[in-house]
Length: 221
Image 1 (cartoon, rainbow, N blue to C red):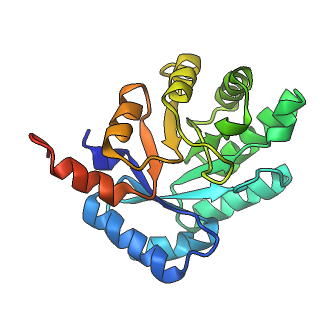
Image 2: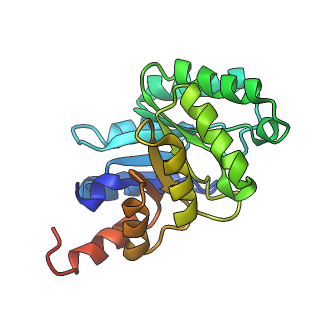
């Protein structure tokens, strides 16, 4: 699969404007990215500007902290899919994981999976805030909650995607879930490293630069 189809072209900054979101969609069309990834208030705008294209719309939910109540997350997911999102990237409740309230952690994810009504759900575990044991547990509970992906980071919690974290996540979920690497993916070489150790999707705001770099490589397509 060509690199562009690994990329969720992402703009989640709080000061993003409608004009920037429209530009994001134009770049996604031009570069044949898999999806755009935006805050839920911009889903309808993306749907308007991605009509008749293959680019999908991913909406973040409970972003970036994940500590709102479960019903609120589920409601946001349902609204986002109604407005045109085809994938949901949800932030977990880290505190419940830290205090080993695994029932709450899992049910929080399961509620969003249910509300997303058969659309893919990516679970952001915010790896920079977790121990390795907590990362494994978060992946295991995400799998039990029937989510489709585990995802490294929001990009707002410090740190970013690391080779070691992708390897750990892959060792935990195997082929039962996909893995999205996000946070700090700014070079073509690093993007390829992440893919080679198990990432099946990349969340990045540097997608255009990655594709331009790839195009300059011998034998690229």
